[in-house]
Amino acid sequence: MRLMIAGGGGFRVPLIYRALSDGPFAGLVRELVLYDVDAVRLAAIEAVLASLAGRAAPGMGRFPAVRAASSLPEALDGADMVFAAIRPGGTAGRTADERIALDLGLLGQETTGAGGISYALRTIPRMLELAAEMERVCPEAWLLNFTNPAGMVTEALVPVLGAKVIGICDSASGLVHRAARAAGVALPEGRLDGVGYSGLNHLGWLYRLESGGRDILPELLADAAALAGFEEGRLFPQEFLAGLGCLPNEYLFYYYETARAVAGMRASDRTRGESIDRQQAELYPRLAAAGPDAYPLWEAARRSREEGYLAEARQAGERRDENDLAGGGYERVALAAMRALSGGGEAELILNTANTVPGTGLGAGAVPAVPGLPADAVVEVPCRVTPDGVAPLPQERPAPPQLALMRRIKDVERLVVQATGQATGTGRRDAALAALAGHPLVDSEILAGKLLAGYEAAFPELKRLWRDGT
Image (tube, rainbow, N blue to C red; front, side, top):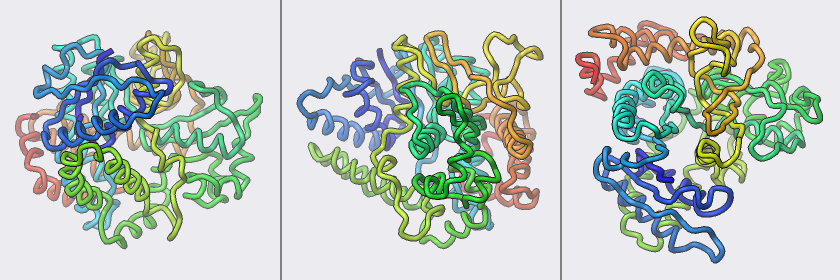
């Protein structure tokens, strides 16, 4: 098949290319088409892919052909699958998203809280343009969305692409597999038997983990030594997890330990965005000129970047697990979904998709996979993936505190979607302001006004969005 990547100059594109050359995804893609609005970044990633193909070990599978396209219609022509991982404003935009919040004493993180809302306000209009172009050029293609905030962006795309869009993130599946290893549970490849997980993107909980038909999650939550063996288990006190009765996604650290997270970020010399911006400004020109050495140069930078992930949540001297540093996360979730959609065998994966159990009707008659949330809302849950599409698997009703938080964040997400297209005139800005004020990590109309003013100053395109919706 032909796979097109929107955001083809993105830092993680080589992970996709590497996974397509060997193992379960070898031969899945015959041609990889890269599209990016930044020619410098695109040339650098092309150099990395060429270097990787040139260093292939004997016996490795054949790499797909690579082609860069200079226009979006050209890139989409003939595409069977589209991966999207775009970042309007680049890493400098991420820096502003984070720093404007931190300067007000609020969490500065690119997908959670104020930073995630700012990122979405810039990104959703560009993703809607991509979806509209797909409808025109390759209407049968699937869109697998990596673009953050993945759940919010996918929510905005469903009205355009319907069931042909899913959101991809590896944090939920990573949590499940790390917890299973710690508990001694062997999960079959492509199966989530006995796994209960529900939430929104970057806001979910593992609430059941079965072995031999018995839920052993309570035993894991009571075992301090086992919890200390993986990242999510170390993020929170063991007593807290035992009382909660479930394992939170790592991004819940920002909700449960907000003061600690903000303090860790403010104590750092640079925000995460500033560190990545500095790294990539120096790295990309070197990659483009490195020739055969481009791939090892990129790989060293990737490992360095992974070591700094969620640094504010770790104790001094604590290092990330080697499995995480080795890579192989979100791109493998996406490729597993792509393989299943194209007839390569059924798979069960945690994905972002509409909250409707298949076969239960539409509208008022639809049954939600996550009880307590609207059936048309995008949620992050285990799904069965086949050539017929993506079917969310029914989950238990979340406990009242979890459900209340999910509902509040879903209201925020829907306000952001309104602000990027559904509202009109001054309604767009009003919706954005309400989203910021309503987010539990802001929770203030005064701070929301200051945040929005700061983001408008940093991103002039927001004022154009309020004025004409583009």
